[in-house]
Length: 108
Figure 1 (cartoon, rainbow, N blue to C red):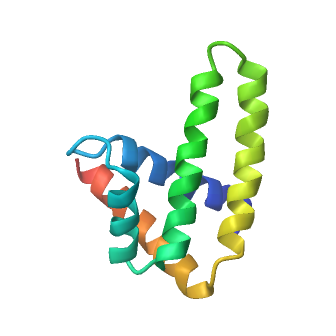
Figure 2 (figure 1 turned 90 degrees about the vertical axis):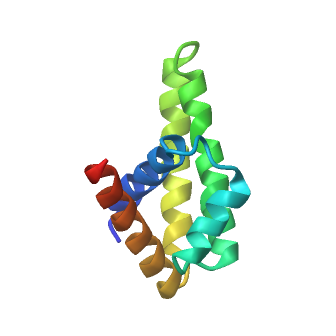
C-alpha cells in the first residue's frame, strides 16, 4: 500500500479515536474495536500504540513547530513500516475498518 494511503488511514484512525461520540476511548476500547473488525490483537495493540505517539507532535506544535514536523515525519515512516509488515489479513481488516470509520464520519 502506498505510504500516503497508510498515513491517511492512520490519520483517519486517530480522528476516529478523538472524535468518538462516547468521548475518547481507552486503549483497551480501541483495541477491542479493531479486534472486532478483524484485526489481530497484536496488530491492534501496535496500531493503538502509534495513535498515542501521534499525539506528541500535536502537543509540541506550539513550542517547537519544526521539531513537531520532524517527529510527525518519523512517526509516519515508522507507522508505514509497521502496517507494511502486518499480515495481509491484518492489513485488509485494518483498511476495511478505516473505510467503515470514514463512512461513519461522513454520515455524522
